[in-house]
Amino acid sequence: MDKKIPKKDTSAFIDIVFDRSKSFNENIINFAKVFRYPILSDFSLNYDKHNEKCHMIAYQLNSSIEIGYFYFKLKKSVRIVGSPSLKKDKVILSFIFGTNKNHLTRVEDSQKEGVSNSVFIHSNQIKTVNSIEKGSEFYLLKISYKKKILRKQFGMPESVISELLSKKNPEIIYVEINSKIINAIESMELNSIPQVTKIPYLLGKSYELLALVIDIIENRSKYRSFKFTTAEVEKLLRVRSYILSDWKNPPTTQKVSKYLGMSPTKVKVIFKQFYGKPIYKFFNEKRLEEGMNMINKGDYTITEISRILGFKNPSHFSEYFKKKYNVLPKKLSKAAK
Image (cartoon, rainbow, N blue to C red; front, side, top):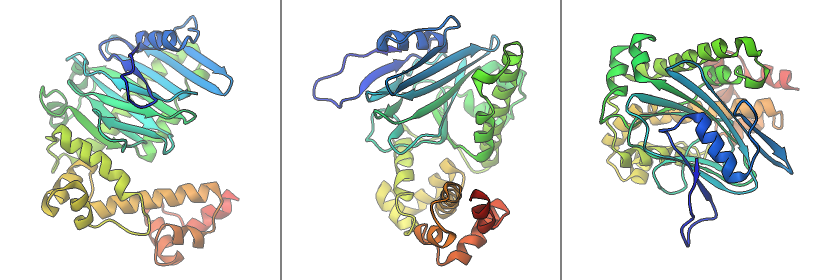
């Protein structure tokens, strides 16, 4: 990560370049130099002073896989710009999770709309931007794979391999993080793993996460072409925030098509290709996930949650909730207390 001289009349963000042609360890060292943080003997970074936190650690698991964990809570607003210089023989999975609304991820230099709790699969010639406002928390897990292992050692399905190894498409693949991926990530407590078993343990987890992502992609492969332009990717990332901005007013194809400036027919096709499900089903699943979060926090009754999320009544909410989680919300609500 090399410090980039800010241009005049730009935002207050400090730009840090994440050079994908270098190892994660090299990027950690450069980041430490920019912010004058101490580097530990194992090339990890662990800074926690004056309400500012920065934790980074990377491991070369074998000749083909590298893993890096990055956590920020800074006093300054930072943009981490992933350079489009990834080596042709590599693909990177970037898991962005546990972030608040102040964190944004996008492709190229679009407007501030973006996403969190997602996976981006990077191939060549694509620039990503992670904007982290001061005081907000940002978690990022990166895993770099040499492409040859996808077929030779992992046995990746041919339909997925052909897309990932393509020189032109896709430049980027977007996947929503689900509960299985979150559980796998949360089990990777890097500081608590015994040193003697750390490398084989993380190697196994890197394959598990790859498998979970492949499973999502493969389930969509019957109707998804992945052939999106950069402009379409930008629009589809932005529309996510638009769709989820008002729980009481479910999105319609007409509203989304107007927002994207596309025909309703095209919107139906590319939204399902990109997110793996139709617009309303995507909205409803996210609405139920928000309901689960609200129940776990314990600040609202089931009646209040159903009203906030725009359901007709508590019974309507409970019916959909049980279909998704196989349990009634009132049981979880009692357990949360």
